[in-house]
Length: 487
Image (tube, rainbow, N blue to C red; front, side, top):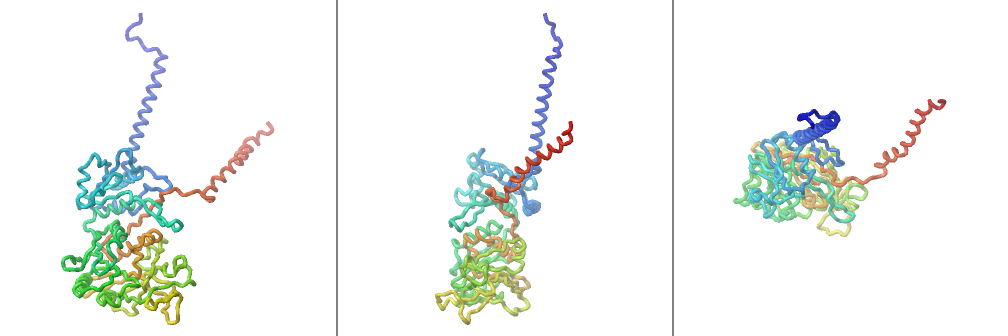
């Protein structure tokens, strides 16, 4: 009969101890793993080694996060199992970079209160799952980012279609952060009522300005709506009818107080029959020439695919274009372009400078002559022509008013030009020049959405390694076995 509390045989003890040690080690490793994961999420320690580094933040984003004036909260509207993993990982990095940034994942199908909270100022059903709501309680301002906000597209001239080829997670989120947290959002006011580019034609421009921190509005210059403030940015885009004397007085008072204006003036606009509008242009030294600019076939790189009316303008080195030229983002396309005469002697209170130029061998084609050929004739004005101008004027009130004129509105309205060129950055940098108190352009590069295909150059290192490996084995064998050949 065995005694109670008999000692465990040594053989059994030797079996239990390793099992207990193994369980303890596994528990310790699990705890370390969980702790490391929590620390990685909290402090953003995880490195992004993906081909496009889609979750890596730029210095621009870090600067915006560091300067957030108010806390910002993000609702990631995703059902469990339908999450966009890179997007949520990027939100973790934002939260790790700033204590003023927080986020949570929410399914609006089980949280209808959230839908009602952000519905008041939005179209019906604009807040849906698979989107973000960026909200600042202090300003009570928010922005909804849908799937379309996170992808970029380019134009494929071979198929004539647009293809999604970039991811813009960081640019969209950082732009929304800055917009919702600003104390005062600068207004971009687009004038209507004179046959200008309408709301449909300027939809792309409005979306671009809105996504870069501007509050875009459409209005007329009548007494009820003309509540312009000096900090506003006024857009007068290719009017077809003249301003009334009262409207001219309204705009002049705005400019004298330090307001800024963005003009577009197409070659077909009847400027000569709009004296009040023309006086606004002359106020800044903008002197439009009659006719359309035609590029020369003798100057490669000045027109698009030998279409001499589609100009590839040259950027002069200015406050607007200098960063673009330095970064190699200096490609624009202007269809059917008007030229401007650069004033030779401006008054002491005015500085007018060319921003975009045609080629030296371009010529001005008179539209009224209805020629059948684009070739120049004797007597036609020759380039180079100013296709866009910028100006600063010190007004009689002591304020500084800024202006910009563009000779082709296609740069503002064409989806193809937006996709094929650097037009968007040019427009935002121009707006930032005009609206000195407004937000600067967010220099955040889009990330490639598709992994680059292999090429002969990219597989060369691997191919070389395959051929070198057997040779290295033979060399190693010779080094090891050589000294032993007499053994």
